[in-house]
Length: 638
Image (tube, rainbow, N blue to C red; front, top):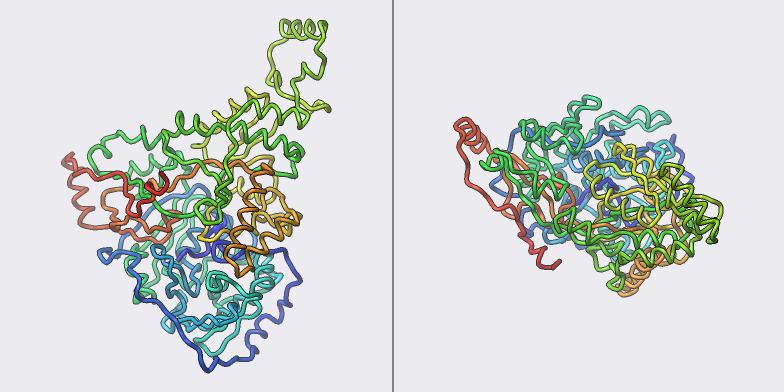
Protein backbone atom coordinates (compact mmCIF):
# COMPACT_ATOMS: atom_id res chain seq x y z
CA UNK A 1 0.00 0.00 0.00
CA UNK A 2 2.66 2.45 -0.90
CA UNK A 3 0.24 5.22 -1.60
CA UNK A 4 1.10 8.35 -3.56
CA UNK A 5 4.10 9.64 -1.61
CA UNK A 6 5.48 13.13 -1.54
CA UNK A 7 9.36 14.44 -1.34
CA UNK A 8 7.74 13.34 -4.17
CA UNK A 9 6.18 12.64 -2.76
CA UNK A 10 4.57 10.23 -4.58
CA UNK A 11 2.58 9.57 -7.58
CA UNK A 12 5.97 8.84 -9.03
CA UNK A 13 6.36 5.51 -7.24
CA UNK A 14 3.19 4.09 -8.74
CA UNK A 15 3.38 5.75 -12.12
CA UNK A 16 6.18 5.52 -14.65
CA UNK A 17 6.69 9.29 -14.80
CA UNK A 18 5.07 12.47 -15.98
CA UNK A 19 5.38 15.08 -18.65
CA UNK A 20 4.94 18.69 -19.63
CA UNK A 21 1.65 20.54 -19.54
CA UNK A 22 -0.74 20.22 -22.45
CA UNK A 23 -3.91 21.88 -23.72
CA UNK A 24 -6.35 20.92 -21.00
CA UNK A 25 -9.91 19.86 -21.55
CA UNK A 26 -12.56 22.56 -21.26
CA UNK A 27 -13.29 22.83 -17.54
CA UNK A 28 -16.86 23.90 -18.07
CA UNK A 29 -17.47 20.49 -19.62
CA UNK A 30 -15.78 18.32 -16.98
CA UNK A 31 -18.91 17.46 -15.01
CA UNK A 32 -20.91 17.03 -18.20
CA UNK A 33 -18.29 14.65 -19.62
CA UNK A 34 -18.59 12.51 -16.53
CA UNK A 35 -22.36 12.59 -16.51
CA UNK A 36 -22.68 11.86 -20.23
CA UNK A 37 -19.99 9.16 -20.40
CA UNK A 38 -21.24 6.21 -22.43
CA UNK A 39 -21.08 2.96 -20.39
CA UNK A 40 -18.99 0.16 -21.83
CA UNK A 41 -19.57 -3.56 -21.56
CA UNK A 42 -17.46 -6.21 -19.85
CA UNK A 43 -15.73 -8.78 -22.08
CA UNK A 44 -17.84 -11.96 -22.10
CA UNK A 45 -14.92 -14.17 -21.08
CA UNK A 46 -13.43 -11.92 -18.40
CA UNK A 47 -11.40 -13.66 -15.69
CA UNK A 48 -11.23 -11.85 -12.37
CA UNK A 49 -8.27 -11.96 -10.00
CA UNK A 50 -7.90 -11.10 -6.33
CA UNK A 51 -5.55 -11.93 -3.47
CA UNK A 52 -6.68 -12.50 0.08
CA UNK A 53 -4.03 -15.11 0.87
CA UNK A 54 -1.01 -13.03 1.84
CA UNK A 55 -0.17 -12.53 5.54
CA UNK A 56 -1.55 -9.58 7.45
CA UNK A 57 0.38 -6.34 7.23
CA UNK A 58 -0.45 -5.26 10.77
CA UNK A 59 -0.74 -7.32 13.93
CA UNK A 60 -3.86 -8.99 15.31
CA UNK A 61 -2.55 -7.95 18.73
CA UNK A 62 -2.92 -4.28 17.88
CA UNK A 63 -5.26 -2.24 20.06
CA UNK A 64 -7.47 0.56 18.78
CA UNK A 65 -7.58 3.94 20.49
CA UNK A 66 -5.53 6.76 21.92
CA UNK A 67 -3.84 9.80 20.46
CA UNK A 68 -0.45 9.66 18.77
CA UNK A 69 1.57 12.87 18.85
CA UNK A 70 4.51 13.22 16.46
CA UNK A 71 6.26 16.14 14.79
CA UNK A 72 7.17 17.65 11.43
CA UNK A 73 9.64 20.42 10.60
CA UNK A 74 7.39 22.89 8.79
CA UNK A 75 3.74 23.79 8.44
CA UNK A 76 2.15 22.52 5.19
CA UNK A 77 2.05 24.74 2.13
CA UNK A 78 -1.36 23.31 1.21
CA UNK A 79 -3.84 20.59 2.14
CA UNK A 80 -4.58 19.90 -1.53
CA UNK A 81 -3.26 16.75 -3.20
CA UNK A 82 -3.36 18.34 -6.65
CA UNK A 83 -2.34 21.82 -7.69
CA UNK A 84 0.57 24.06 -6.63
CA UNK A 85 2.79 23.07 -3.70
CA UNK A 86 1.09 19.70 -3.30
CA UNK A 87 4.24 17.67 -2.69
CA UNK A 88 5.89 19.12 0.39
CA UNK A 89 6.74 16.99 3.43
CA UNK A 90 3.19 17.11 4.77
CA UNK A 91 1.86 15.45 1.61
CA UNK A 92 3.25 12.12 2.87
CA UNK A 93 1.08 12.29 5.95
CA UNK A 94 -1.94 13.61 4.08
CA UNK A 95 -1.82 10.93 1.40
CA UNK A 96 -1.14 8.05 3.76
CA UNK A 97 -4.13 8.82 5.96
CA UNK A 98 -6.77 10.46 3.79
CA UNK A 99 -6.79 10.21 0.02
CA UNK A 100 -3.85 8.25 -1.33
CA UNK A 101 -5.66 4.92 -1.69
CA UNK A 102 -5.29 3.32 -5.11
CA UNK A 103 -7.44 0.63 -6.66
CA UNK A 104 -4.90 -2.04 -5.73
CA UNK A 105 -1.64 -1.94 -3.82
CA UNK A 106 1.50 -3.96 -3.27
CA UNK A 107 1.83 -5.96 -0.09
CA UNK A 108 4.84 -4.39 1.69
CA UNK A 109 6.30 -7.77 2.71
CA UNK A 110 5.56 -9.98 -0.31
CA UNK A 111 5.36 -7.40 -3.15
CA UNK A 112 2.21 -9.16 -4.39
CA UNK A 113 -0.75 -7.07 -5.51
CA UNK A 114 -3.60 -6.99 -3.02
CA UNK A 115 -7.06 -5.37 -2.96
CA UNK A 116 -7.53 -1.84 -1.77
CA UNK A 117 -10.35 0.24 -3.24
CA UNK A 118 -11.08 -2.57 -5.70
CA UNK A 119 -11.80 -6.14 -4.61
CA UNK A 120 -10.97 -7.76 -8.00
CA UNK A 121 -9.11 -6.86 -11.17
CA UNK A 122 -8.60 -8.26 -14.65
CA UNK A 123 -5.62 -7.35 -16.83
CA UNK A 124 -6.35 -7.91 -20.50
CA UNK A 125 -4.02 -9.45 -23.08
CA UNK A 126 -3.12 -6.04 -24.51
CA UNK A 127 -1.34 -5.22 -21.22
CA UNK A 128 -2.97 -1.79 -21.10
CA UNK A 129 -6.65 -2.44 -20.39
CA UNK A 130 -7.68 -3.30 -16.83
CA UNK A 131 -11.12 -3.88 -15.36
CA UNK A 132 -11.85 -3.38 -11.67
CA UNK A 133 -14.64 -4.42 -9.32
CA UNK A 134 -14.95 -1.61 -6.81
CA UNK A 135 -15.53 -2.37 -3.14
CA UNK A 136 -19.21 -1.67 -2.53
CA UNK A 137 -18.51 -1.03 1.15
CA UNK A 138 -16.19 1.90 0.40
CA UNK A 139 -17.38 5.30 1.57
CA UNK A 140 -16.02 8.81 1.63
CA UNK A 141 -15.53 10.38 5.04
CA UNK A 142 -18.89 12.16 4.66
CA UNK A 143 -20.63 8.79 4.25
CA UNK A 144 -21.23 9.08 0.50
CA UNK A 145 -20.69 5.82 -1.46
CA UNK A 146 -17.61 5.67 -3.68
CA UNK A 147 -18.56 4.76 -7.23
CA UNK A 148 -17.04 4.58 -10.69
CA UNK A 149 -18.13 8.18 -11.33
CA UNK A 150 -15.65 9.37 -8.70
CA UNK A 151 -12.74 7.76 -10.59
CA UNK A 152 -13.85 9.15 -13.93
CA UNK A 153 -14.08 12.55 -12.27
CA UNK A 154 -10.51 12.25 -10.96
CA UNK A 155 -9.26 11.58 -14.47
CA UNK A 156 -11.19 14.54 -15.90
CA UNK A 157 -9.96 16.73 -13.07
CA UNK A 158 -6.36 15.78 -13.87
CA UNK A 159 -6.90 17.20 -17.36
CA UNK A 160 -8.23 20.51 -16.11
CA UNK A 161 -6.31 23.76 -16.41
CA UNK A 162 -8.06 24.91 -13.23
CA UNK A 163 -5.89 22.67 -11.04
CA UNK A 164 -2.73 24.52 -12.20
CA UNK A 165 -0.76 21.28 -12.14
CA UNK A 166 1.37 20.40 -15.19
CA UNK A 167 2.30 17.08 -13.60
CA UNK A 168 -1.26 15.75 -13.54
CA UNK A 169 -2.19 17.44 -16.81
CA UNK A 170 0.64 15.55 -18.45
CA UNK A 171 -0.02 12.28 -16.67
CA UNK A 172 -3.66 12.27 -17.76
CA UNK A 173 -2.64 12.82 -21.36
CA UNK A 174 0.40 10.58 -21.56
CA UNK A 175 -0.66 7.59 -19.48
CA UNK A 176 -4.46 7.30 -19.37
CA UNK A 177 -6.29 6.87 -22.66
CA UNK A 178 -9.62 6.51 -20.89
CA UNK A 179 -11.26 5.87 -17.53
CA UNK A 180 -14.69 4.40 -18.14
CA UNK A 181 -17.68 3.61 -15.99
CA UNK A 182 -19.25 0.22 -16.72
CA UNK A 183 -21.71 0.42 -13.87
CA UNK A 184 -21.64 2.03 -10.43
CA UNK A 185 -19.14 -0.49 -9.10
CA UNK A 186 -17.24 -1.60 -12.18
CA UNK A 187 -14.52 0.45 -13.83
CA UNK A 188 -12.30 0.18 -16.88
CA UNK A 189 -8.93 1.92 -17.22
CA UNK A 190 -7.11 1.94 -20.55
CA UNK A 191 -3.51 3.08 -20.59
CA UNK A 192 -1.99 4.85 -23.55
CA UNK A 193 0.44 2.04 -24.26
CA UNK A 194 1.19 -1.59 -23.63
CA UNK A 195 2.94 -1.88 -20.27
CA UNK A 196 5.18 -4.47 -18.67
CA UNK A 197 3.68 -3.49 -15.30
CA UNK A 198 0.10 -2.41 -16.01
CA UNK A 199 -1.17 -2.60 -12.43
CA UNK A 200 1.75 -0.52 -11.16
CA UNK A 201 1.26 2.01 -13.96
CA UNK A 202 -2.51 2.33 -14.18
CA UNK A 203 -4.11 1.10 -10.94
CA UNK A 204 -2.98 3.93 -8.67
CA UNK A 205 -5.97 6.12 -9.49
CA UNK A 206 -7.89 7.33 -6.45
CA UNK A 207 -11.49 8.58 -6.13
CA UNK A 208 -12.35 12.27 -5.91
CA UNK A 209 -15.72 13.11 -4.28
CA UNK A 210 -17.55 14.32 -7.38
CA UNK A 211 -20.61 15.20 -5.32
CA UNK A 212 -18.60 17.67 -3.20
CA UNK A 213 -16.07 19.12 -5.67
CA UNK A 214 -16.63 22.36 -7.54
CA UNK A 215 -13.95 22.77 -10.18
CA UNK A 216 -13.59 26.31 -11.48
CA UNK A 217 -11.01 29.08 -11.73
CA UNK A 218 -11.18 29.66 -7.95
CA UNK A 219 -10.48 26.04 -7.04
CA UNK A 220 -6.78 26.42 -6.19
CA UNK A 221 -7.21 29.37 -3.81
CA UNK A 222 -10.45 28.04 -2.37
CA UNK A 223 -9.07 24.61 -1.48
CA UNK A 224 -5.52 25.46 -0.37
CA UNK A 225 -6.41 25.09 3.33
CA UNK A 226 -9.52 22.98 2.91
CA UNK A 227 -9.43 19.49 4.50
CA UNK A 228 -10.15 16.62 2.13
CA UNK A 229 -13.32 14.57 1.98
CA UNK A 230 -11.47 11.31 1.68
CA UNK A 231 -11.76 7.52 1.38
CA UNK A 232 -9.08 6.90 4.00
CA UNK A 233 -9.36 6.28 7.75
CA UNK A 234 -8.63 9.87 8.82
CA UNK A 235 -9.71 13.41 8.09
CA UNK A 236 -8.08 16.64 9.19
CA UNK A 237 -10.05 17.82 12.20
CA UNK A 238 -8.00 20.74 13.51
CA UNK A 239 -5.33 23.14 12.29
CA UNK A 240 -3.34 25.72 14.24
CA UNK A 241 -1.29 27.64 11.69
CA UNK A 242 2.41 27.26 12.29
CA UNK A 243 1.84 24.93 15.25
CA UNK A 244 -0.04 21.71 14.49
CA UNK A 245 -2.30 19.62 12.26
CA UNK A 246 -4.61 17.00 13.79
CA UNK A 247 -6.17 13.99 12.05
CA UNK A 248 -9.24 12.32 13.50
CA UNK A 249 -10.29 8.79 12.69
CA UNK A 250 -13.44 8.39 10.61
CA UNK A 251 -16.12 6.71 12.79
CA UNK A 252 -16.96 3.18 11.60
CA UNK A 253 -14.49 3.48 8.74
CA UNK A 254 -15.41 1.06 5.95
CA UNK A 255 -11.85 -0.36 5.82
CA UNK A 256 -12.15 -1.77 9.33
CA UNK A 257 -13.86 -4.81 7.83
CA UNK A 258 -11.07 -5.54 5.34
CA UNK A 259 -8.34 -8.12 5.84
CA UNK A 260 -5.32 -6.05 4.88
CA UNK A 261 -6.29 -3.13 7.11
CA UNK A 262 -6.30 -5.28 10.26
CA UNK A 263 -3.80 -3.88 12.73
CA UNK A 264 -3.31 -0.64 10.81
CA UNK A 265 -4.45 2.93 11.59
CA UNK A 266 -4.96 2.11 15.25
CA UNK A 267 -5.11 5.62 16.73
CA UNK A 268 -8.26 7.65 17.26
CA UNK A 269 -6.29 10.83 16.63
CA UNK A 270 -2.90 11.72 15.20
CA UNK A 271 -1.50 15.15 16.00
CA UNK A 272 1.47 16.46 14.02
CA UNK A 273 3.21 19.29 15.84
CA UNK A 274 5.50 21.69 14.01
CA UNK A 275 8.88 21.30 15.74
CA UNK A 276 12.37 21.77 14.40
CA UNK A 277 14.21 18.48 14.11
CA UNK A 278 16.93 19.41 16.60
CA UNK A 279 14.27 20.06 19.28
CA UNK A 280 12.28 16.85 18.90
CA UNK A 281 14.05 14.95 21.66
CA UNK A 282 13.40 17.75 24.16
CA UNK A 283 9.68 17.51 23.45
CA UNK A 284 9.74 13.70 23.63
CA UNK A 285 11.49 13.72 27.01
CA UNK A 286 8.84 16.09 28.34
CA UNK A 287 6.14 13.68 27.22
CA UNK A 288 4.83 16.03 24.53
CA UNK A 289 5.68 13.56 21.74
CA UNK A 290 5.08 9.81 21.71
CA UNK A 291 7.44 8.92 18.89
CA UNK A 292 10.24 10.50 16.88
CA UNK A 293 12.77 9.48 14.28
CA UNK A 294 16.43 10.10 15.13
CA UNK A 295 18.30 11.40 12.11
CA UNK A 296 21.73 11.78 13.67
CA UNK A 297 24.17 8.88 14.08
CA UNK A 298 26.05 10.91 16.68
CA UNK A 299 22.94 11.50 18.77
CA UNK A 300 22.06 7.83 18.46
CA UNK A 301 25.50 6.81 19.70
CA UNK A 302 26.07 9.49 22.34
CA UNK A 303 22.89 11.39 23.10
CA UNK A 304 20.75 8.78 24.81
CA UNK A 305 22.27 8.38 28.24
CA UNK A 306 19.61 10.13 30.30
CA UNK A 307 17.57 8.38 33.04
CA UNK A 308 14.42 7.72 31.01
CA UNK A 309 16.49 5.67 28.55
CA UNK A 310 18.53 3.95 31.25
CA UNK A 311 15.33 3.01 33.07
CA UNK A 312 13.65 1.64 29.95
CA UNK A 313 10.85 4.21 30.03
CA UNK A 314 11.84 5.55 26.63
CA UNK A 315 12.82 2.90 24.07
CA UNK A 316 15.08 3.01 21.03
CA UNK A 317 14.90 0.67 18.07
CA UNK A 318 16.87 0.64 14.85
CA UNK A 319 14.56 -1.30 12.53
CA UNK A 320 16.12 -2.43 9.24
CA UNK A 321 13.90 -2.18 6.17
CA UNK A 322 14.44 -3.38 2.60
CA UNK A 323 13.33 -0.38 0.61
CA UNK A 324 14.95 1.02 -2.56
CA UNK A 325 16.66 4.27 -1.70
CA UNK A 326 15.91 7.39 -3.67
CA UNK A 327 18.01 10.33 -4.78
CA UNK A 328 20.00 11.62 -1.81
CA UNK A 329 23.03 13.87 -1.96
CA UNK A 330 24.41 17.03 -3.53
CA UNK A 331 22.43 18.16 -6.57
CA UNK A 332 24.07 20.71 -8.88
CA UNK A 333 21.94 23.18 -10.81
CA UNK A 334 23.12 23.11 -14.41
CA UNK A 335 21.62 26.56 -14.91
CA UNK A 336 24.09 28.00 -12.38
CA UNK A 337 27.11 29.25 -14.36
CA UNK A 338 29.67 27.60 -12.09
CA UNK A 339 28.15 24.14 -12.62
CA UNK A 340 27.84 24.32 -16.38
CA UNK A 341 31.37 22.97 -16.72
CA UNK A 342 31.52 19.17 -16.47
CA UNK A 343 35.13 19.11 -15.26
CA UNK A 344 34.24 21.40 -12.38
CA UNK A 345 31.41 19.06 -11.39
CA UNK A 346 33.67 16.01 -11.54
CA UNK A 347 36.19 17.83 -9.35
CA UNK A 348 33.50 18.35 -6.71
CA UNK A 349 32.80 14.62 -6.70
CA UNK A 350 36.50 13.85 -6.15
CA UNK A 351 36.51 16.15 -3.11
CA UNK A 352 33.78 14.21 -1.25
CA UNK A 353 35.48 12.05 1.39
CA UNK A 354 32.75 9.60 2.42
CA UNK A 355 35.00 7.23 4.37
CA UNK A 356 36.36 9.94 6.65
CA UNK A 357 32.90 11.40 7.13
CA UNK A 358 31.39 8.02 7.98
CA UNK A 359 34.21 7.16 10.36
CA UNK A 360 34.61 10.47 12.18
CA UNK A 361 31.13 11.95 12.13
CA UNK A 362 28.65 9.12 11.54
CA UNK A 363 30.11 6.30 13.68
CA UNK A 364 30.41 4.03 10.63
CA UNK A 365 26.62 3.67 10.69
CA UNK A 366 25.99 4.19 6.99
CA UNK A 367 26.59 2.63 3.60
CA UNK A 368 27.72 4.71 0.65
CA UNK A 369 25.22 5.22 -2.13
CA UNK A 370 26.59 4.11 -5.46
CA UNK A 371 23.86 4.46 -8.04
CA UNK A 372 21.00 6.67 -9.13
CA UNK A 373 18.84 3.53 -8.77
CA UNK A 374 20.21 1.98 -5.57
CA UNK A 375 18.27 -0.95 -4.15
CA UNK A 376 16.80 -2.06 -7.49
CA UNK A 377 17.86 -4.34 -10.33
CA UNK A 378 18.35 -1.20 -12.42
CA UNK A 379 21.43 -0.06 -10.50
CA UNK A 380 24.40 -0.47 -12.82
CA UNK A 381 26.90 -2.75 -11.00
CA UNK A 382 29.78 -1.15 -12.92
CA UNK A 383 29.06 2.34 -11.61
CA UNK A 384 31.37 3.19 -8.72
CA UNK A 385 31.38 6.42 -6.73
CA UNK A 386 34.15 8.88 -7.53
CA UNK A 387 36.99 8.28 -5.08
CA UNK A 388 38.18 11.01 -2.77
CA UNK A 389 41.23 12.18 -4.67
CA UNK A 390 42.37 15.83 -4.34
CA UNK A 391 44.99 15.32 -7.04
CA UNK A 392 42.39 14.27 -9.60
CA UNK A 393 40.19 17.11 -8.41
CA UNK A 394 43.02 19.55 -9.16
CA UNK A 395 43.39 18.09 -12.65
CA UNK A 396 39.71 18.61 -13.42
CA UNK A 397 39.72 22.08 -11.88
CA UNK A 398 42.62 23.03 -14.14
CA UNK A 399 40.71 21.67 -17.15
CA UNK A 400 37.75 23.78 -16.04
CA UNK A 401 40.05 26.84 -16.05
CA UNK A 402 40.38 27.36 -12.28
CA UNK A 403 43.77 28.17 -10.77
CA UNK A 404 45.22 29.90 -7.73
CA UNK A 405 45.12 33.71 -8.10
CA UNK A 406 48.92 33.82 -7.80
CA UNK A 407 49.24 31.42 -10.74
CA UNK A 408 47.12 33.62 -12.95
CA UNK A 409 49.00 36.73 -11.84
CA UNK A 410 52.36 35.28 -12.84
CA UNK A 411 55.16 33.10 -11.49
CA UNK A 412 58.14 35.48 -11.73
CA UNK A 413 60.38 36.89 -8.99
CA UNK A 414 58.51 40.19 -8.70
CA UNK A 415 55.12 38.40 -8.59
CA UNK A 416 56.36 36.36 -5.63
CA UNK A 417 57.71 39.49 -3.89
CA UNK A 418 54.39 41.25 -4.48
CA UNK A 419 52.42 38.35 -3.02
CA UNK A 420 54.71 38.13 0.02
CA UNK A 421 54.41 41.87 0.68
CA UNK A 422 50.66 41.70 0.38
CA UNK A 423 50.61 38.95 2.99
CA UNK A 424 52.63 41.09 5.39
CA UNK A 425 50.64 44.29 4.93
CA UNK A 426 47.06 43.08 4.67
CA UNK A 427 45.04 40.77 6.91
CA UNK A 428 44.07 37.43 5.39
CA UNK A 429 40.65 37.58 3.72
CA UNK A 430 38.10 34.87 3.15
CA UNK A 431 39.00 34.97 -0.54
CA UNK A 432 42.64 34.03 -0.05
CA UNK A 433 43.59 30.79 -1.83
CA UNK A 434 40.18 30.51 -3.50
CA UNK A 435 40.65 29.44 -7.11
CA UNK A 436 39.62 31.80 -9.88
CA UNK A 437 39.11 31.45 -13.62
CA UNK A 438 40.49 33.65 -16.38
CA UNK A 439 37.65 36.12 -15.82
CA UNK A 440 38.65 36.47 -12.18
CA UNK A 441 35.49 34.67 -11.01
CA UNK A 442 36.07 32.73 -7.78
CA UNK A 443 35.30 29.04 -7.34
CA UNK A 444 32.51 29.89 -4.93
CA UNK A 445 28.97 28.60 -4.57
CA UNK A 446 26.28 28.16 -1.92
CA UNK A 447 24.79 24.87 -0.72
CA UNK A 448 21.20 24.93 0.52
CA UNK A 449 20.15 22.42 3.16
CA UNK A 450 17.13 22.12 5.43
CA UNK A 451 18.16 20.12 8.52
CA UNK A 452 20.45 21.64 11.14
CA UNK A 453 21.59 18.12 12.05
CA UNK A 454 23.45 18.06 8.72
CA UNK A 455 25.59 21.04 9.68
CA UNK A 456 28.39 18.95 11.19
CA UNK A 457 28.60 16.76 8.09
CA UNK A 458 28.54 19.69 5.71
CA UNK A 459 31.17 21.58 7.69
CA UNK A 460 33.59 18.65 7.32
CA UNK A 461 32.91 18.55 3.57
CA UNK A 462 33.29 22.33 3.42
CA UNK A 463 36.76 22.07 4.95
CA UNK A 464 37.89 19.51 2.36
CA UNK A 465 36.60 21.75 -0.40
CA UNK A 466 38.33 24.80 1.05
CA UNK A 467 41.68 23.01 1.20
CA UNK A 468 41.30 22.46 -2.54
CA UNK A 469 40.57 26.16 -3.13
CA UNK A 470 36.77 25.86 -3.34
CA UNK A 471 34.69 28.28 -1.28
CA UNK A 472 31.55 26.28 -0.49
CA UNK A 473 29.15 28.34 1.59
CA UNK A 474 26.34 26.81 3.64
CA UNK A 475 22.80 28.15 3.82
CA UNK A 476 20.30 26.58 6.23
CA UNK A 477 16.71 27.09 5.08
CA UNK A 478 13.33 26.15 6.46
CA UNK A 479 12.42 22.76 4.88
CA UNK A 480 9.49 24.03 2.86
CA UNK A 481 11.47 26.98 1.56
CA UNK A 482 14.45 24.81 0.65
CA UNK A 483 12.32 22.34 -1.27
CA UNK A 484 10.42 25.08 -3.06
CA UNK A 485 13.69 26.63 -4.21
CA UNK A 486 14.80 23.21 -5.43
CA UNK A 487 11.62 22.84 -7.48
CA UNK A 488 12.10 26.28 -8.99
CA UNK A 489 15.89 25.81 -9.50
CA UNK A 490 16.64 28.83 -7.35
CA UNK A 491 19.87 27.40 -5.99
CA UNK A 492 23.42 26.56 -7.00
CA UNK A 493 23.89 23.31 -5.07
CA UNK A 494 21.41 21.69 -2.70
CA UNK A 495 21.39 18.71 -0.42
CA UNK A 496 18.17 16.92 -1.37
CA UNK A 497 16.75 13.58 -0.25
CA UNK A 498 13.87 11.89 -2.04
CA UNK A 499 11.94 8.68 -1.54
CA UNK A 500 11.69 5.92 -4.15
CA UNK A 501 9.24 3.24 -5.12
CA UNK A 502 9.89 -0.35 -6.03
CA UNK A 503 10.47 0.75 -9.62
CA UNK A 504 12.62 3.77 -10.50
CA UNK A 505 10.89 6.73 -12.12
CA UNK A 506 13.69 8.43 -14.09
CA UNK A 507 11.40 10.56 -16.23
CA UNK A 508 10.55 12.97 -13.44
CA UNK A 509 14.24 13.58 -12.67
CA UNK A 510 16.06 13.37 -15.99
CA UNK A 511 13.74 13.77 -19.00
CA UNK A 512 14.32 16.85 -21.14
CA UNK A 513 10.60 17.68 -21.18
CA UNK A 514 11.15 19.12 -17.70
CA UNK A 515 14.42 20.83 -18.51
CA UNK A 516 12.74 24.04 -19.65
CA UNK A 517 9.97 23.90 -17.07
CA UNK A 518 9.93 24.87 -13.38
CA UNK A 519 8.23 23.43 -10.32
CA UNK A 520 9.14 19.81 -11.05
CA UNK A 521 11.64 17.22 -9.84
CA UNK A 522 14.21 17.74 -12.58
CA UNK A 523 16.17 19.77 -10.06
CA UNK A 524 19.29 19.76 -12.24
CA UNK A 525 17.73 21.16 -15.39
CA UNK A 526 19.16 18.12 -17.16
CA UNK A 527 18.03 16.46 -20.36
CA UNK A 528 19.47 14.86 -23.49
CA UNK A 529 17.95 13.03 -26.43
CA UNK A 530 19.89 9.88 -25.56
CA UNK A 531 18.52 9.79 -22.02
CA UNK A 532 15.01 10.57 -23.30
CA UNK A 533 15.24 7.57 -25.65
CA UNK A 534 16.55 5.31 -22.90
CA UNK A 535 13.73 6.34 -20.57
CA UNK A 536 11.26 5.53 -23.34
CA UNK A 537 12.80 2.05 -23.68
CA UNK A 538 12.55 1.51 -19.94
CA UNK A 539 8.94 2.62 -19.84
CA UNK A 540 7.68 0.84 -22.95
CA UNK A 541 9.81 -2.19 -23.82
CA UNK A 542 8.38 -5.61 -23.00
CA UNK A 543 11.93 -7.02 -23.00
CA UNK A 544 13.23 -7.17 -19.41
CA UNK A 545 16.86 -7.18 -20.54
CA UNK A 546 16.33 -4.12 -22.72
CA UNK A 547 14.72 -2.24 -19.82
CA UNK A 548 17.57 -3.13 -17.50
CA UNK A 549 20.24 -2.21 -20.04
CA UNK A 550 18.53 1.12 -20.72
CA UNK A 551 18.63 2.20 -17.09
CA UNK A 552 22.15 0.84 -16.63
CA UNK A 553 23.15 3.21 -19.40
CA UNK A 554 21.22 6.10 -17.79
CA UNK A 555 22.99 5.32 -14.52
CA UNK A 556 26.35 5.52 -16.28
CA UNK A 557 25.46 8.82 -17.97
CA UNK A 558 24.42 10.43 -14.68
CA UNK A 559 27.71 9.30 -13.17
CA UNK A 560 29.81 10.49 -16.11
CA UNK A 561 28.09 13.89 -16.22
CA UNK A 562 28.80 14.42 -12.51
CA UNK A 563 25.53 16.27 -11.88
CA UNK A 564 24.88 14.43 -8.62
CA UNK A 565 27.12 13.43 -5.70
CA UNK A 566 25.37 10.51 -3.96
CA UNK A 567 25.75 10.54 -0.20
CA UNK A 568 24.94 7.68 2.12
CA UNK A 569 22.24 5.08 2.57
CA UNK A 570 20.55 4.34 5.88
CA UNK A 571 18.59 1.09 5.37
CA UNK A 572 16.85 1.43 8.70
CA UNK A 573 14.49 3.56 10.73
CA UNK A 574 15.93 4.83 14.04
CA UNK A 575 12.90 5.33 16.25
CA UNK A 576 12.64 6.67 19.79
CA UNK A 577 9.36 6.18 21.65
CA UNK A 578 7.74 5.78 25.04
CA UNK A 579 7.37 2.23 26.32
CA UNK A 580 3.58 2.18 25.92
CA UNK A 581 3.92 2.37 22.13
CA UNK A 582 3.90 -1.19 20.80
CA UNK A 583 5.01 -2.72 17.50
CA UNK A 584 4.57 -6.04 15.63
CA UNK A 585 7.31 -8.69 15.71
CA UNK A 586 8.81 -7.39 12.45
CA UNK A 587 8.54 -3.89 13.91
CA UNK A 588 7.89 -2.31 10.50
CA UNK A 589 6.93 -3.86 7.16
CA UNK A 590 9.79 -4.74 4.82
CA UNK A 591 9.01 -1.99 2.28
CA UNK A 592 8.80 1.00 4.63
CA UNK A 593 10.01 4.35 3.38
CA UNK A 594 9.04 6.43 6.40
CA UNK A 595 7.65 5.53 9.79
CA UNK A 596 4.23 7.04 9.08
CA UNK A 597 3.67 4.51 6.28
CA UNK A 598 1.44 1.54 7.11
CA UNK A 599 0.89 2.68 10.73
CA UNK A 600 1.15 -0.78 12.26
CA UNK A 601 1.94 0.36 15.82
CA UNK A 602 -0.44 1.12 18.67
CA UNK A 603 -0.79 2.42 22.24
CA UNK A 604 -1.26 -0.19 24.98
CA UNK A 605 -3.24 1.36 27.89
CA UNK A 606 -1.99 -1.29 30.33
CA UNK A 607 1.61 -0.53 29.36
CA UNK A 608 0.94 3.17 29.78
CA UNK A 609 -0.40 2.60 33.29
CA UNK A 610 2.58 0.39 34.19
CA UNK A 611 4.94 3.05 32.85
CA UNK A 612 3.30 5.77 34.90
CA UNK A 613 3.66 3.62 38.02
CA UNK A 614 7.31 2.84 37.26
CA UNK A 615 8.09 6.52 36.75
CA UNK A 616 6.28 7.46 39.96
CA UNK A 617 8.30 4.84 41.90
CA UNK A 618 11.52 5.61 39.98
CA UNK A 619 11.65 1.94 39.02
CA UNK A 620 13.37 0.61 35.89
CA UNK A 621 11.60 -1.50 33.29
CA UNK A 622 13.24 -4.49 31.54
CA UNK A 623 15.57 -3.52 28.67
CA UNK A 624 14.91 -4.48 25.06
CA UNK A 625 17.09 -5.05 22.01
CA UNK A 626 17.98 -1.87 20.11
CA UNK A 627 18.27 -3.51 16.66
CA UNK A 628 15.53 -5.36 14.78
CA UNK A 629 16.59 -6.95 11.47
CA UNK A 630 13.60 -9.19 10.84
CA UNK A 631 14.19 -9.26 7.07
CA UNK A 632 18.01 -9.86 7.25
CA UNK A 633 18.75 -6.63 5.43
CA UNK A 634 22.12 -6.09 7.10
CA UNK A 635 23.36 -9.50 5.96
CA UNK A 636 22.59 -8.66 2.33
CA UNK A 637 24.33 -5.30 2.51
CA UNK A 638 27.43 -6.76 4.10
